[in-house]
Length: 202
Image (cartoon, rainbow, N blue to C red; front, side, top):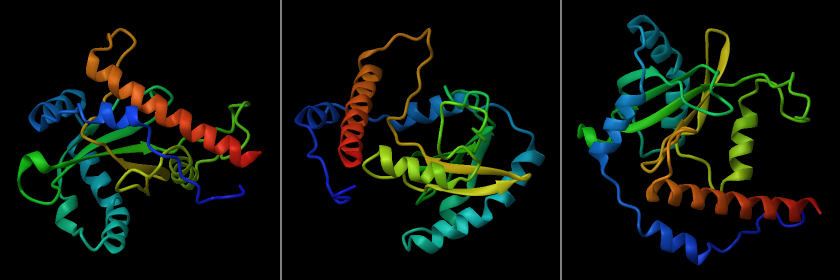
């Protein structure tokens, strides 16, 4: 890694595609509600308590945050995913900066799975949540907001923030123009990042 500070210029096509994004917060939270599966209240309370170290760390790291920001509005199971489809995941809607329901924030809490039985993976196979943080730094130009981790029932979980244009599609779901646009941006950004890492390795 000869130059760890090297950055790639943002492609013009990315700026052009991004300029077409429109965000409807009402529809976004309707979609969040539709994918959030019922969670027993006792488990919700237990997860909330387990999150305290994560929340305290985030507040300590960012002076613009306070404990009220992380007040839980609703929590449920999350069953979507590809590589993580069988992992334990929670979707959490938190208060955000104000009491306005449309500035709420959505967090995904995901089990850090042990990957030691997957022979094609050579490094970072344990359940140390730091591998997630490191992976985020390598793949993305910047980490997701509110990235962190905590332990619950002797399992490590990592936490990430969902952006407003986050969307997952099923195999049976066709790509409408918005979904396909988001996919194109992701693939383009990912490809540029991988080229950058490959150059470092050589």
